[in-house]
Length: 264
Image 1: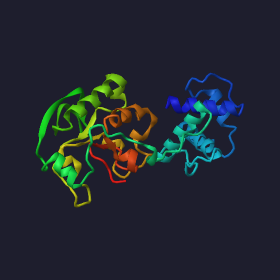
Image 2: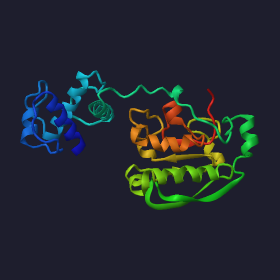
Image 3: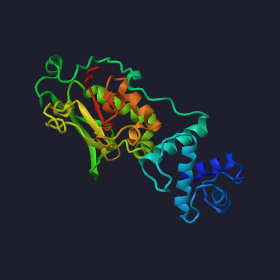
Image 4: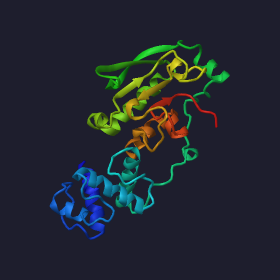
């Protein structure tokens, strides 16, 4: 909430309606500034007025935010992140184009559901080993359960360990927990893809899910947490090793990463 108030104070300052400190405290000076905003319902509670002003400021910059209702939802959150970026950089965020994301293939991961894939990885459930993780994780659906080891295909094991070691070196364990990069959503699972007949990459132990609660299957980059710039280094760690994010390449299932290429 403090971050939201700081953005409100900056926006009010732009309008010469606030001359206090950018301290994230919605005190009398901040609220007097909000009282002078046209179209903002002064009868709303304080929190709702703050959100309503963020929505008004987003609309003024042609940022899609929906109705000015003072309620915090996915569109308002996305608009808020865009406003924050503009205030920090003086321009809008670069347009995201999945075709511009070029992922190298140093290990020559095969194309999913191809003859080469089955030749490379073998039958479903074969070649599996269990490896130690570079940092402790937690089951996303049962957070008190610690995850110290995972099962994967032997051909991806060393790469997987390198990726997660890079994540630990890059973020540190405190930031990993803060960003929920330790919320493990699953690895090997001998199942078909959701709502489909083809077998999932999980069935070979070459796909892993992270923080599924905040990166649900049908969510795009406007809602998925892993699409946020805070996770750019996370994706760099994976993509340097050739792993493919369905979110980054297809803009859905942002929780999912796999050691298999996608058809162009």
